[in-house]
Length: 350
Image 1 (cartoon, rainbow, N blue to C red):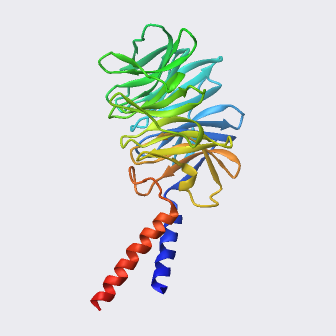
Image 2: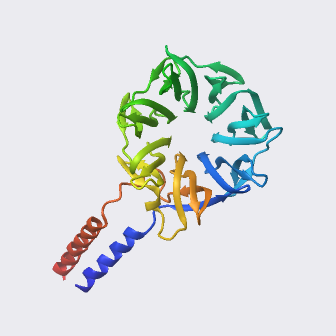
């Protein structure tokens, strides 16, 4: 009996151990910061309030936010980063957005009313130009085709094969997700009975994520694999998916039944509240997750001791190691049962 009790205590301790570690990326002198994209080296791009009260794009260096140059702009935001460390986003100059590419050689700024949202490892940039989705290839803007009835479009994600996802506005004012294939064809994303949908990211296998409307007006996160659209569920209220890695792990955020907003990780068919993967009394409340890399590192925004702060979460086991967490009672029974069997076998051999 004493041995069995020890086994139960050991199992309980194992259940309570956190799966993830978390790092605060700090800020740029102001009270808030948000991590939006993370490359496969764990470098994060995002934005934060600077000491002058303006939003400014940043890149994480040695685990802390470092401001990207504003140039003639007044505000800037970083939305994408590739494995070479090239960053894309927007700089506001004279009140107008200019797509911006930050690299080791400096910043390249495109014309007014352009937005850069994602970049792949070939350096192809996805975004929009005066309301028309585009891909920037070898410095040349290539407009993406639109379907009949689409009067505005923007690209939000691009994979290493050149597949692009985003959204377009219909003539009735609603939005629908769009998927542009490298062969030039474009497909419209459906809904869950509602009016709208949005495609936000795509991995190298062509799995697309985003969110779509329900008949009751709520939004649910989705994934699309081989043309089949899957409802990822929620943590209580509406849910929104923003990032996916090559293992099919998906991150985003969802409202809870009480109206609070929490970040999630969707893996192995289950939506997990990211806060459940942190140790108790960590000081964090993770509100939004936007990016995940192939090592399973996640970035987003959370409240750290009440202050909105960019974070980087790391799974020590790597991508694909986080499974749906069973009920503690189930784990305890399984552990106790296995321990009891081992004990009985040892006694039988004595």
